[in-house]
Image 1 (cartoon, rainbow, N blue to C red):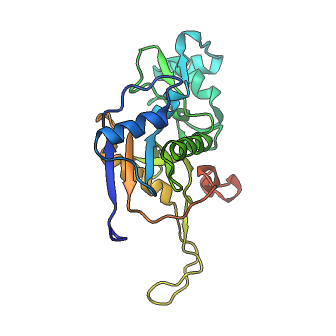
Image 2 (image 1 turned 180 degrees about the vertical axis):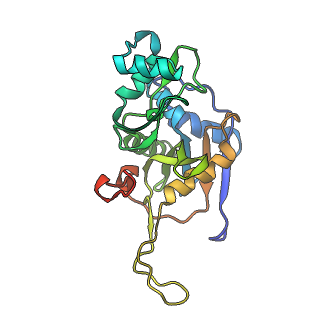
Image 3 (image 1 turned 135 degrees about the horizontal axis):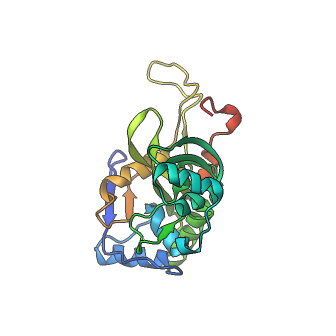
Length: 255
């Protein structure tokens, strides 16, 4: 396969994931059943939601007692104050608030800046249940890489855990990496020369975000395809995870 040819393969037939399920085994079996077994050097992009389900990151709203602020925000926005309380519990701080749309832009305990701390009720069974992000998405990715290597005997496999975030300055959503393992998160072009012999000074491409976004093209939100294989991409192995590319507040011009 040429270096400039990349395949993005959605893995179908993955059942509803429950807490404690062996996610690595399930996705490997689904790929085999699709006659597209996982290969050495593949990057597996896995939707955050199935990782959270396997790790039991469910919150039953009947067990949540809203704070005074959650009650106030819920009253002004029309949102369930119990969900607001979970959002608050999973945040370090609130960045912005919009009562009219019922949106809290928060910084999560992981350091992500996103709407409602990533708390979601879509594709979750039950009307009284929401799902949190994994507690440590990089560790989740690392555990999946380790299990897949053990099950397959491969030396080089990477995992990117993806989630859908909105973006400042643009409408529409894209998928970002919230966890990764086995792949260098960025491709650093700084110090290299372009075709006009000019030295690049700032370009540092977040390849794991590009991979997460590309995989969404086959995964979708309603297609019941929570895993995709990215095949043919050239990448460097690394022990660094997604946390390594979170921008420090001191260098962030927008906070």
